[in-house]
Image (cartoon, rainbow, N blue to C red; front, side, top):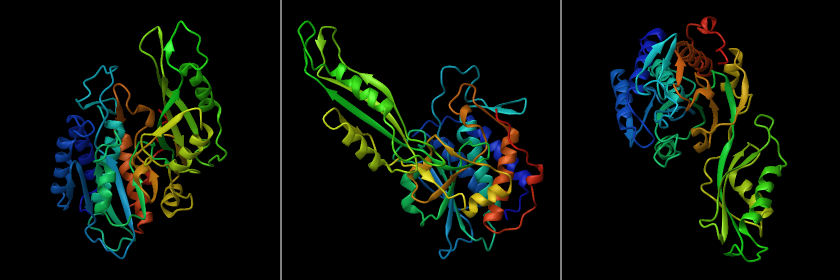
Length: 375
């Protein structure tokens, strides 16, 4: 073990989170927060590697013959929305809450996982190797995020991705497919007859996206969901545009992969619209409820559910579990915060879940852990 008590590691994690909040780290601009994470590893005498703004480390007694568990969360943030009444870069502790941009998404998860990894770093005879990745560009799904680090890692057997779940077990996550859809028509002067207006043609296509139901419904994630989120056509009042452009957000359940969904949509809209995906790599994720990692959480009173939001799970090919302190609806909100108690409980539960999974003895801490409030 690390030689530090869980309490000490937790307090150091909270202090690190305050430093992260005070340091702007928008996607692709995380170099200063990467330096703070660098300092964490250095101060705990943990060798690490860095590429761009991603940092990763392996447990001290890494054994190539053993399977590997990935611990991952991100240190980039979105930009603060206009509703902030507090300074988003000032870590304010008040009424048991720690306010600041990225506190909930996903700073609390990141520092809790760093504390957990540090706790197990020196441990011998673990059933799994551990690799900790503090990743960049999660919020933008950028090319220099977790996906760029995977080539440097051994084969991953499973993963915990730290995102705010109230420390409940998100055993599946919907994937994302963003589509650019073009509906064509006959351009011309608005004063003349025209029975092939692109905007009118788009109505049928929009209604199709609204009404179509995919056949397969997931036991955990439910049905697929498609939403038209953008529309653009025309620049002049007296000119009928040649095309109407749509943007469609498609949330993919674990019954399909993204190429399958794209093929279905293209076949259904053949002759009515041109469909182009922005990417195909943000796939759905899942882990069996019977997996030992999930069972370890269930034994500690955790519940399972399916998550509708996207995370770095989408770039992993291994089975993965989304799990972390904090409450998802607070993410990207004005005056974002996380409860200090949530971090304390998060570190304790991460350690106890992994102790069961890694078959390591540890001082039971779950007696002091209560169910997070549904805030």
